[in-house]
Image (cartoon, rainbow, N blue to C red; front, top):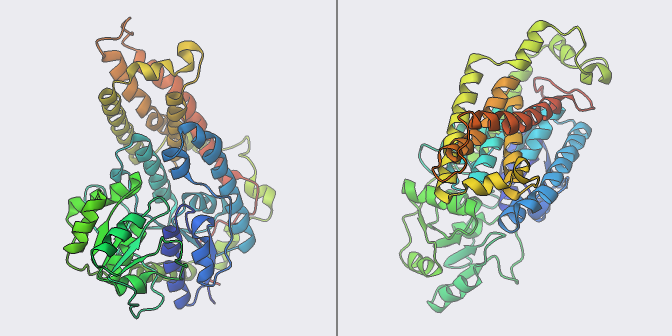
Length: 495
């Protein structure tokens, strides 16, 4: 029978939609029934490709953090994230798919709640980022999805490097390849992202005699796939990773002109790796120079088909391994039984597993805590922000400052990571306390601090803030699997 597979994309930028559409179309070629979801800026492209898309609550952290402030994140994006997950959970229960393939962290969380087999597609690893908060956020959703996905697909144009996480499946870049014949639309194709504007660059290129297609211009109408246009050009100028992957699959030399911090991180990653087919131009004048002497054409296969094949084969193998009795065990007789809280006669072993963790989890949490402590200590020292953080704490003057809000959200999320990784509460709190210890140790040792704090100061801060918010994050993380609804934990059988 045909499997029904949900494919969900992140709402920020159309590139996420086209990337997941590439996977969805390949799944359909293999006989799957595909359901699309995601909404946001990519919904237009989903409709152009013939899908009726489910649109959950839209969340945009780039706008609220890079274009706003942390207070906007806490008052807009965080509540929106909760609503987006809830919308996805309801949709997954109603659609009852055999699996979910996504690059959307919120859809991944919903799959965990709804018991739907999860496959993740993701490229933005923590090692890309310099900003501590962005790196912490990338660490959280990477670690969570690694712990919950049946397979984590990592589409890359770069060779293996120190930023690659363990446990991922490297695949070639992904591109939505609708019409394979090139379309001759100009010498240079300019593809700005939602956060960049290439109008002036396009004008300057035309003055130099190039025939330019600017897909960000007001007179450009969106098309189902840009790949044929990029394939027919001599060079492409872009900001984001989705067009970088398009250029890689199309075999067209690419000039990267990044705008957002994520785009800058990807550009630096490609530049450091000296990847054939790409050059980075941070200034507009450098774009013009790079187009005059473009790099050698890249040569890559399309990773979309590789992902689709792996998902279908994994579901088929799971269906072969599972038996009717196995599925009967995974489908309890009543919702109340499925989602009830633990009974008072829970075994000692169950309680022990919630308090403590296995050896590898303790080691992982400790290593993570030490790494985070070192990162935070380095950033605090570099910015001389010892007292600024202290004065934002409610224990200092009874007020709550923005650094405290940022830190408490980070510690809370780290506690959730521990819970969703099946670590015990002790290991989760150790992980969550890492950033607190990193600040507290540097604050305790800084020579200008007066009066000098007691030697126990870092431990006191770790217990007070790391313990409090880490425990809250752990409890919320544990509760994600016990929300009301139909229990659908199963092995991913194909219909």
